[in-house]
Picture 1 (cartoon, rainbow, N blue to C red):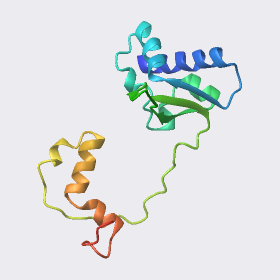
Picture 2 (picture 1 turned 180 degrees about the horizontal axis):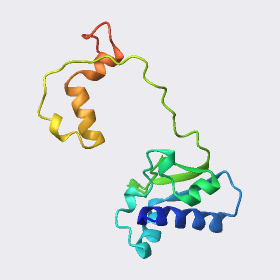
Picture 3 (picture 1 turned 90 degrees about the horizontal axis):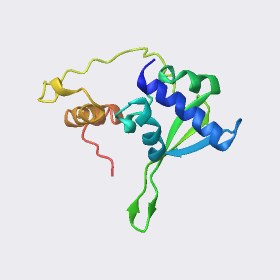
Picture 4 (picture 1 turned 135 degrees about the vertical axis):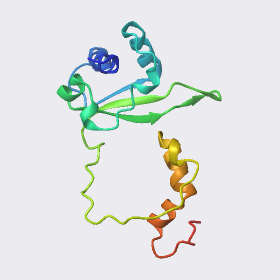
Length: 147
């Protein structure tokens, strides 16, 4: 079992013990995640709450029917507090994408980001720089710009 999975299981157990069983929503923050991650040895506590697919949830999350949603951070006295999240009893936070019926091949000139598209930010830069977003949003008018 990976350290991230161990941390997520510990988080589920902690919030249920803290707030009581059978609730639909359990709110927690990054400070709690960091506190729970130290004994496990999971070093990137900020990554613990990033779950891209329902298949990558921990066993305890699946047993309880939990998904994680991000609530953002609050500000108090002009200072940003720890980011908040919630465990919610729902799988509806994940979308099952429809199969692609017809793929349209778009030819574009390779750019400097093509070899570095390893993260969300790099991919977003790539699709913006090559106007792929515009082609998707405005397929009949490549000059259109949202205002």
